[in-house]
Length: 101
Image 1: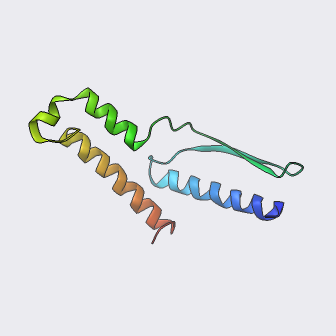
Image 2: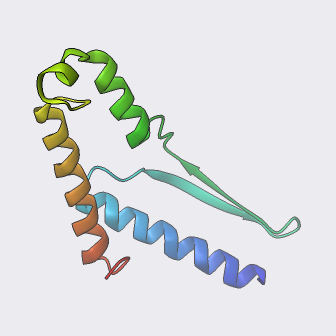
């Protein structure tokens, strides 16, 4: 990929991320980006997403192990609902911005 195409691709990605961030607060923030034409390296400065859905579910399960005994679930109904709401908001934002169809 030539440098101009690479820079354009990163620029488009950053614009999309900003638009997505305005649509939902469940998107990682990108603070800036730079391109080193001599090394053909693009760099992005972004928020550290220190959690994944898998980690979050494990943490919620450890926080409330008795919920497994009550209804067979790993996390409480309230926490499951919150996760679903976030996932649906993310999917709608992706759809509105034509990232998925």
